[in-house]
Length: 224
Image 1 (cartoon, rainbow, N blue to C red):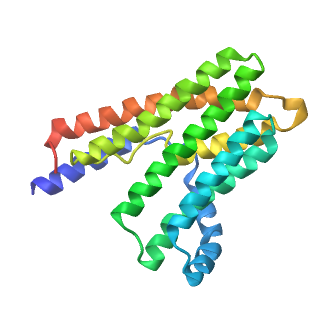
Image 2 (image 1 turned 45 degrees about the horizontal axis):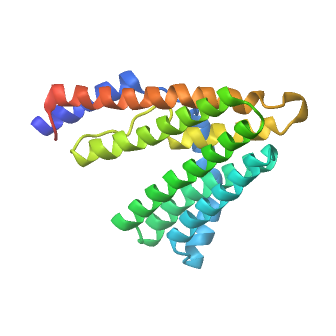
Image 3 (image 1 turned 90 degrees about the horizontal axis):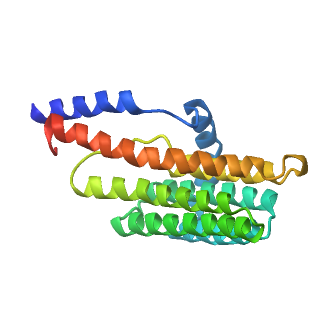
């Protein structure tokens, strides 16, 4: 009885706070589009950790491209790396190779990937005398790390914390497309600067949103 009441409260809170930066219709279409490569990789029995590591490698290459101002290439690689990050989980489930260590490995490399990307972008801004944009980049990085930390800490305490308006998938999509559009000469750096400001604000807001979400759970039912 208490369990049903708790989960009902959680769902009510989730409906109140859930805002999507990526429309669900687009997300479903994207997930549908990668079903074929997922089946292909599953048949090859490639270990899911390979895709996790490949995602990190692409993030490092993307960071170098960002440092050098190669935004079009960087954006493309960021999106490809983000796709591999989705594929690794799907392959793990399809092959029965999902594990607690695999989840930890994936989460850890995801954090490193974001650190490389934001540092690469921040270095570009510093190198070009764009110090305010550089500062905002590191505010965005801090917010991104806190989004992940609040969820991990909350779930470790037994709360649900999967909501958020600027989660990793949103950050990667916006960074990828922001970089690609900045590679178009007449737009210059406006798209990626706008994206960094967007992430800086909404990633930190997401951290606050998640804290509020857990606080509401604690008020209405404590831990499940």
